[in-house]
Amino acid sequence: MVAEAKVLRVNLSEKSVRVDVYGEDVVKQYVGGRGLAAYIMAKEVDAKVDPLSPDNKLIFAPGPLSGTSAPTGGRYNVVTKSPLYRLYCFHEFWWIFWSGA
Image (cartoon, rainbow, N blue to C red; front, side, top):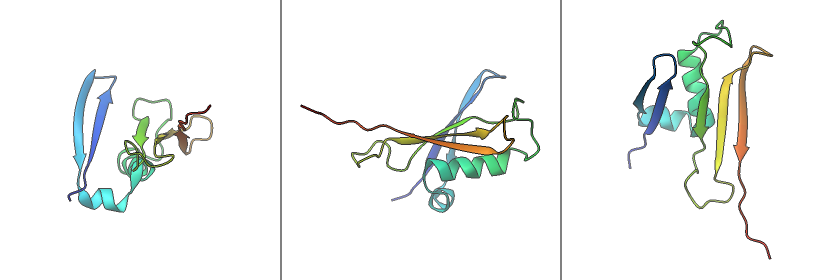
């Protein structure tokens, strides 16, 4: 099985959309949404970028078990450079669905 990650890129400044594909080497080294988002931030965003500039990125990244029936598998991360702390921020969200009587 070949692992790959498809990333939908939406550029609001240019009003464009494209799909990038990361290969097995990147996917295995940076597992999950948080790992891949950290890879993209480190590779594409300068550490000195102004957090409110268009050069900063806002990444929504699903976890490695999203779309499966694994318990708490519906996690995703929102990643950006914070304007408050001027550091990269990772916020993890997850949904729990259950049926109760």
